[in-house]
Amino acid sequence: MKRTALFFALSLMASLVVNAQKENKAIVVISSESVEHDYGDRVVIYHEQKEYSGIVGNDGIFQVVENQPEFPGGMAELVKYLKKNLRYPQICKEQGLQGRVIVQFVVNPDSTLSDFNVIKPVNPHFDKEALRVVSTMPKWKPGEQRGKPVRVRYTLPVTFRLPEDTVKVDTVSVNKQ
Image 1 (cartoon, rainbow, N blue to C red):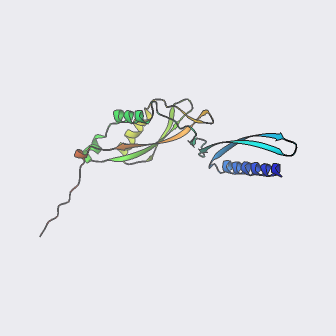
Image 2: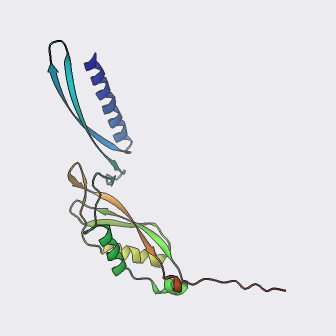
Image 3: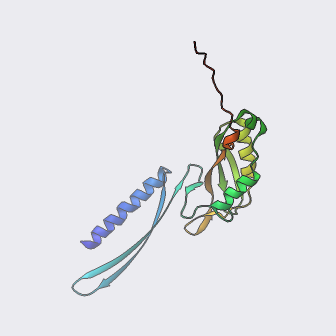
């Protein structure tokens, strides 16, 4: 009876995995090891289950992995890099424009970056500058799934913000009569 229940549970989990793979929603790989000990009057089954999961897009590029890609030196170094290399477009500065551009790119298993794309544009000048800076970043530590480097899509917000004393505010004059 216990063996039948265990077999049924493993079959059900395997079915869920196959369905998730077909829908490209999530890939879940289950590796199972069972050890059976027969003590004469009873059979004891020790069952260990390891689960690895990652979300993969329709293009085969991971969006979520066990170990995310990382800029050399971590997030603090990424912020320093952006502050050092990002140039505020002069026309946007003169107009007092600010905004956040969302850029996506792929971190490849060989640490290179590719497939740069603006997914949330703000202004053509901001978009162009964000792409320029992101596309010139150094190699990243690749993301890993099940201990192996894989292609991972990474989303990065790039914020353009003027110091508060230089922000241009439009004022409206009201005539009081």
